[in-house]
Amino acid sequence: MSENRFNIVFDGALLPGVDTTTAKLNLAELFKSDVSAIERLFSGRKVSLKNNLSQNEAQQYLEALHKTGIDARIETEPSLQLNLGEVQESPQPSARHPESIIDPASPYAPPRAQVGEAFAEYGTLKPFSFEGRIGRLRYLAWTMVLTLAMLPLVGLGFWLATTWLLASDSIAGLIVGGLVAAVVVLAFAFVSIQFNVQRLHDLGWSGWLWLINLVPFVGSIFPFILIIAPGNTGANQYGPPPPRNTTAVKLLASLWLVMIVLIFMATFAGIFGALQEDYDSSDVSSYESSEYSDQSAEEPAAEAAEPASPSVDYQEEEEQ
Image: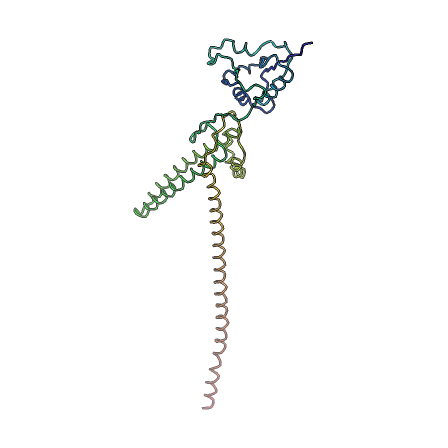
């Protein structure tokens, strides 16, 4: 009795929680094919992904396909009405790759099948764009560069406005300086929003979630989520993962620790100085109040001693 043979079939269904774009990108990486060719597998028709397999082989292929996020299944031969070759050979005027989407050297073989892992290629960095993805360290590094570039410009604008105000004795310089500073701050804020959107893309979230920063109380917590939450390891609907972090990125990100320490030290120094000033002023006030009370006590005593002199004069007049 011959051994039963099995086929791997797919009709476009996905596993729960898997995005269609992510599944297409994972399948394209698995088959070493273009995403446009993979999209034909999601037409809703039953498609044969692999034929004539033993039960063990079919199970191995099925596990590999499940890692891509598609809900493929095993069926015994010959229950299929359509195979992958027919889908590939069907006339497609707009197709750019007429060859079969299954590469003979594909890592789809059981010993090499590893689906859903990070792509070998990375996305292109776009600092001044709302497209692309950046990781946590690169997000910190880019915001540090933005902060270091903004502070000198704002300080320079304030100095020029003050100099103009003192030289011309007019508020025109202050107004112009304020407008220039406002334009610079808005420009840097726009670039900062772009960084936040790319970081949200790395998490697989929509860039519109940046508006959460405008919500009271919640907006003060949301930036910490962008710093702590890890991004998607593989490609998502916003593109492939960002490049690996360089040494410069790591150094710039670590500068935030130095800046936080300096801010805490300056804050504590200011609080201690204010407390010391209040303590000194309270000592001076208590000393002055004690001096005032001593003087007040001496003045009534002197006033009480004065009426004794007229009685002496009156006695002298009687003797005369």
